[in-house]
Length: 316
Ligand SMILES: C[S@@+](CC[C@H](N)C(=O)[O-])C[C@H]1O[C@@H](n2cnc3c(N)ncnc32)[C@H](O)[C@@H]1O
Image 1 (cartoon, helix red, strand yellow):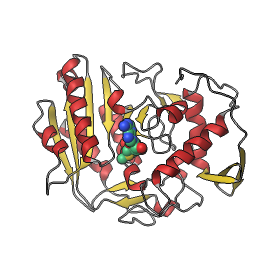
Image 2 (tube, rainbow, N blue to C red; image 1 turned 90 degrees about the horizontal axis):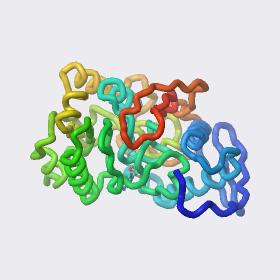
Image 3 (cartoon, helix red, strand yellow; image 1 turned 90 degrees about the vertical axis):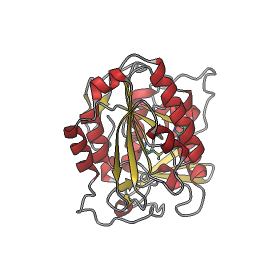
Image 4 (cartoon, rainbow, N blue to C red; image 1 turned 30 degrees about the vertical axis):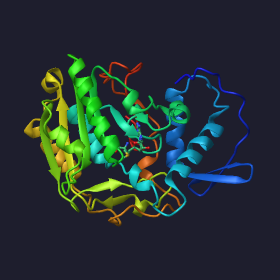
């Protein structure tokens, strides 16, 4: 990401670790992130930031990012983090393997699985891989996952944007959309997608039979990492003809995706609402693997580089 105006010199931010938590201090104020996500931010910065090869601005930019999301979340326990719940890692893996997905339309550097994504704050997230707001992003080809914040107006605008993109492109283009199955009353986004000529398939995952990854994943306790969904979830496959030819939702692919949604019974606990944002160690799921292999799935036309894989941290 390159901003039009060069970054001014940034004030010094201090870093220390308390067990598995990175603590960043600026003018007497502290923000925290678990060690795994701190390492993930380092990797994302290395992939995406082009104006700071020596990492001199890294800590100040991490501080800004964390502070901004902290303010967005709000100060109360669970406040706002519900808008940040992510798909389980197993589901992302299946989407990547079976449908060639390599980009999240709605994400943050803290909750992204892929290293390419759109997010709410391009100016501070851009150094970590954000390609901007989704509604201002216009890919012509590629396979995308979209799990938007559950906000009806944004979801409706998102569907309108998908349809415009799918009409305009004759190259393979696919959006796998994940929204709550709210039917009483039904949301305009769901109604519009169900009537869309681009809809190739639709799946329902029942309430309490699947999980989301906590919106506080970068700071919560490991046993609070996943919570059971209290609503059903709808998955809709919107694809143009070329996208359908390339990534058709065949029974075999759908079977793997459905299996990936099954909650892992060995988890310590599975709360039915997002857990409180405690500052404690240990999200092993987010600790990056030392080796980064290139996967070469440069499907998305906007992308400058192929997608690189990073296992445990889930950065593909
Ligand atoms: C439900 S979470 C998705 C989590 C995860 N990336 C996934 O796909 O499962 C929605 C994310 O979209 C981000 N977001 C909000 N407005 C956005 C926008 N206009 N464009 C892109 N992302 C946005 C939120 O900050 C949040 O991180």
